[in-house]
Length: 276
Image (cartoon, rainbow, N blue to C red; front, side, top):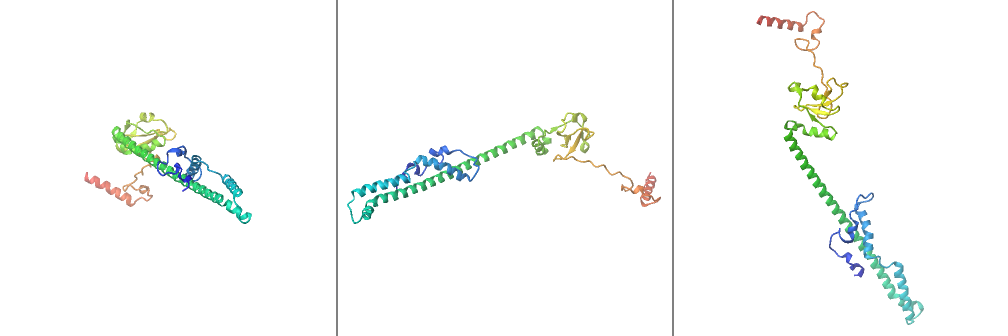
């Protein structure tokens, strides 16, 4: 094996991130091509510089001519000049060809070393990035669990809408809880004083976890609108007015003097009077 291939840089073993290769770390954010190719292109000139450039093709060719000329001058003539020159240049030409083959083998080994080191460093970098991302995700999950536990302790009644409130916070709102309300059950509503304490455009909720949004008086005469968990306003429809015995609209407006609706209404009145 050529002495070139026995250079220390080609010895197997060691980390891909140490020694002369360490100066190639930690370049990132490549704009073109694969990470592997970019890293290899960075490493190759570093390895080439560390190993040395070797002799050029021109220098090796001149050596061949010089050695051949010296041998030709001292070579005993045998036959014609061509056969004499062939004998004189045989060994220099063999050395020239062998040095060229050794240099090509060295360059191939250099490319292989750059590829091996480049792939190893990129994979190590990716593995480290994955570990870091996993650790950050674990920390985020732990922090979220701690926030949930704290929220459950601070306001257990509001905990069922914890995710809803967090979603509003991500949208830039600062949901607030009011305790000043009137009414009860489904008819509970904020007091005017509680509404005035909320900035216009903000979201708030009551002890029953009903959600509201503060608006101007131009939008609502109460200064707020009821909203659902997505933030959309809940439209309250007017109840249908009861108009007859069967509570069906239009029955009492029947233009006929006598109809089935009125018959049963009169019958109900008489039954009530008889029972009394």
